[in-house]
Image (tube, rainbow, N blue to C red; front, side, top):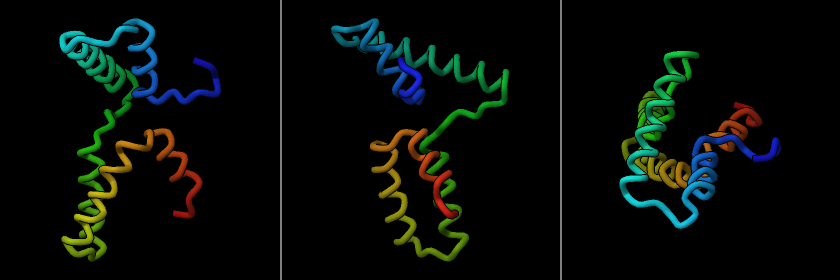
Amino acid sequence: MTANQTKDPATIRRALERKYFPRGLEINEIRLLDEIQLHLMDAAEQTVGVERWSNAANLGYAIVAGLSVGMSPKEVEKLVSAMRVVHDNVSVAEAASHYNRSPF
């Protein structure tokens, strides 16, 4: 991985999967990698206070914020639906970059 490439955990994992499992992964191998990833994230959280990313928690924040500013349940539902699409198509690093460049 070059210095210019993102170091987003999902990107790193996909690169490692391609490198070490070029023929693809069996379900047990996926489960093993998932478990290793969780243990590494727990260790990082305990060591340096890094909190685990969670799409569900992020959507929860959006629901709480939307309702707190008077959005209707229908508007909140539309926001959550749009955020689910964004979660699938925008990396955490890209989202952070958008936020950091925004006027908000």
